[in-house]
Image (cartoon, rainbow, N blue to C red; front, top):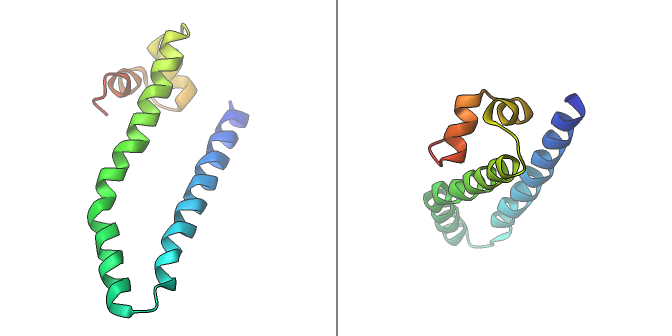
Length: 93
């Protein structure tokens, strides 16, 4: 299990590093006013992007469930309890 968690941490760290690098591109905008407005737009639109990560997680839980795992097993595999695993699967978390 710890190896799987290490793999998950590494995958998350890789994605977060790429996101940070993409955000750092804003620093390269030479006009400070444009840079500030662009950063503001990113901040305003960022909450919508959270939905993508939730959908990826829900699809992964669905894949585990369709593969024969029950919710207690899924919860253990993803580091949560069975009821949260079920709520993720239903799109409620």
